[in-house]
Image (cartoon, helix red, strand yellow):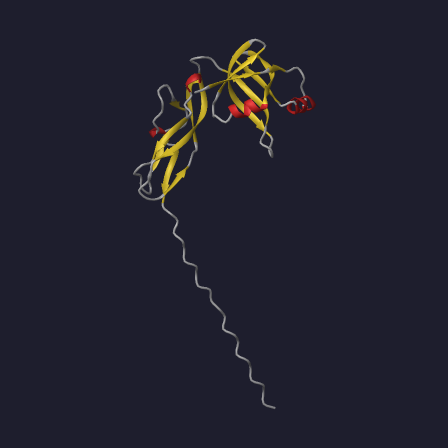
Length: 199
């Protein structure tokens, strides 16, 4: 798992107004916590942070006040319209420490027949903080309709263990939906014109 170094500034102003000023300055308010340490409020450069978070489970080496703190993004609040990051929670991690994370599933291969349904796009695992897999590959080559791959069948990197149940379905191969012929619509016959009654 790659590490990204990012410089941060300590933050002493709080509240909505202070957060808006921070964001206008091109920074993202955040907090670092964990390992029984006091929460540390910081501001991070928005552009660098956005680029770093494009990699899932990226480790951030935060440089603040002459210290370097290894962290893992825990939660990012985003603007519902712009999708820009409005606040970030970072948890402190240490070399060799185990963490629980969601890792993306990548499907490779071709099925013999059927539609591939990715039932779960990620799976929860426990791994060393500095060795979190970027993805877990699922090979569907040669599978047929009715087949499925469950969490217990996943090939996990060394040192990574499942947190979810073994029988959790990850990928299923379903039968293609046949196009049903439209039912014939009954057309009413036009009513015969009544002959005028004889006068």
